[in-house]
Image 1: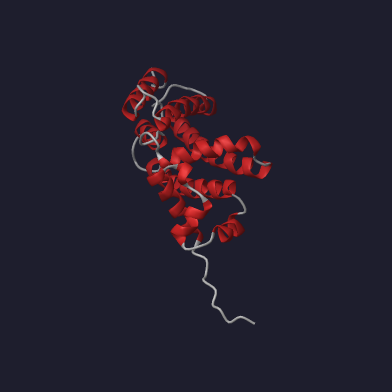
Image 2: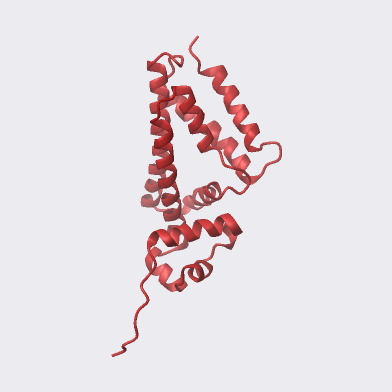
Length: 199
């Protein structure tokens, strides 16, 4: 029997952090199982043992990144500021930092791959979307109840606002000319100023 010592697998968070760093530094197209394995000192076979596929690695990386964003979102949305200030903070967190924002690059790839995903993977993506939606609905409902916002249906307004944010955010993430982050934030502020304040 061999007495060779086994090298323990690095913690899951270290792998996911490395994957996100590789996306940020080199782009998603450079993220390979072999390359990630070199970064964390594992073979691509070991990575596949733990994650089963690159699709699963990407989805787990997205879930991990979303967990961090969710904590930041909770911090921003539970402060003492008024509903509009918290809504602006939500929008600021939602919109990508710029072209090739790693979180949005990953989101776009997972969305693209979801066309062939199984129901479990789709449910996990829906859970991520649902968390953003619920938080937005809560801010809108509070603003309406306090008289800061006109009496909109928070769920319907949130669905429309998130569609607007998604469209603009994709433009920023892919680097579409004429739609940088500051322009998008200005467009969204203008939309909110026109459609939401109580009269």
